[in-house]
Length: 305
Image 1: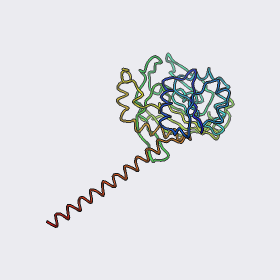
Image 2: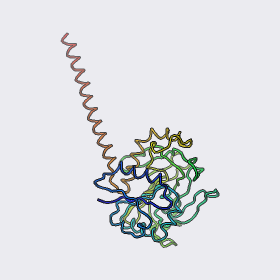
Image 3: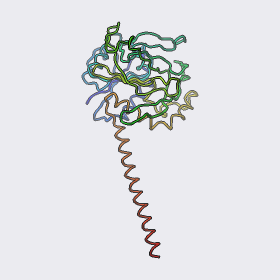
Image 4: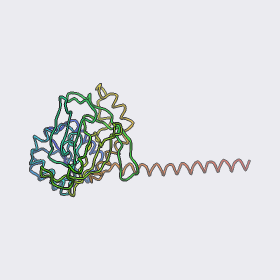
């Protein structure tokens, strides 16, 4: 059995971490994966990498990650992913994995600077939708996203919970030096789009999958782990959002599972969805035959009379 590790330390939002754990428990087979929170000290020590199926960095504020992990912790995470590991960055965990970030530029919460992991060869700029507040959920919304799945043609349109997340702006080829060492000495990576903010002008990148050595990092500016049931309906900022997201829960569960699959994590929920579709097809076929048989009986009775 391998373990999905979730960062648990300064910078992590406790509420989001609990939602991630619940979502993982619903999505993963307990006989295949265990789920464990891991402290900055244990991350730096590095013993976890030999049993890790994936490492998840939750929402919160990434300066807390930087202060707690320092260069040593970032190096362990980066080496783990580059040597075939898997990283899932949600919200602040997404900012932390960019080459650099620009948050609330010119505003009271401004944070601008380089970031250590550099999985995404570009900038994490946010909030994609403003304003943002650390004190309440006034910046929250149901963000329109088009998600791309390799298993299906085209995209899936949905609305996903958002609060302060980033969009992704890749460096130009000239400035990023893709595949080469940057001035920081860290090799920049390549990426593909998994989703866009379909409701924003120019439809910028919302979710990306980065190739990191022989490993992978999926980064999301929207909170893929959230369902409407995770939102407090008594909160004036969340009441309408909760209602709006209810009709997207099934779709968003599918997108969450797809993101796990992109990370190399075998999700149980997609197979459940396929089983449900097969059952429904079989049931529809039975009903269709029943209706056809009923029609034939009626025709026979009409002929006999």
